[in-house]
Length: 134
Length: 133
Image (tube, rainbow over all chains, first blue to last red; front, top):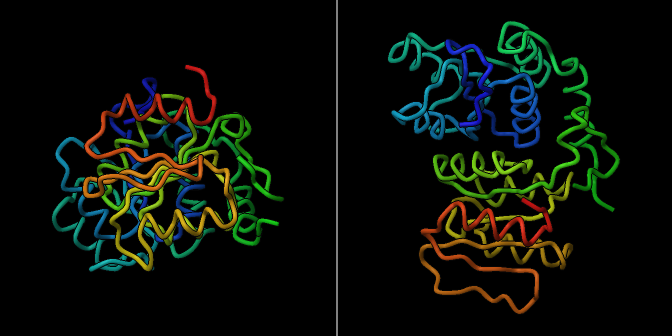
């Protein structure tokens, strides 16, 4: 996985679960910029596949509460806390919360710095959603 | 990558060629995406053609690589058809373990059978988007 070699070995990979490709990509990109390896899941079923893969070392799950799949975000969090209690789960109820969670992870993560402010993340996502090709 | 009116806050990655990977199997999508990022590409990951079309509504990548059989309202060939109507020259690579070939007569489409070697696919993508090694 694309882990920064200077990253803290005890906290390297984040699984992001979000059904919105635009916000998922921007948040994932943000986290990669601050040094995390990131796995992107479009729904909770994909997340469970990733969590079941023995070669993947995931430390934190950032999950949109409205993520789709056989489980919703809350149910996924419950499953993780029951079956994988060593993993940290952060639920986000929208783009702003996800950006704040990502910024917090970056402040406490490998590079101890945000590549840019979370407000810029939210603004960028909103502009992408609003933009249309001419 | 053409971002329409949106400017990215992460300037360095804006210089890199962008690949839209459309693949419903997360582990395959992840392996391919990681290989492409290691090779210097910016990668957007879509889990199906519907997600790909959502993304294409806002941004245009430099190349698309798409599986064929995926859940959702359209498959990879349907995605190709939609893309060709509005982006006739956008390079598209179609991958499949089930098809023998895909019509590549439009000049911008390539077909690669699965299973493929990641290094070979990366070389092909580099050539398609003129990105040197």
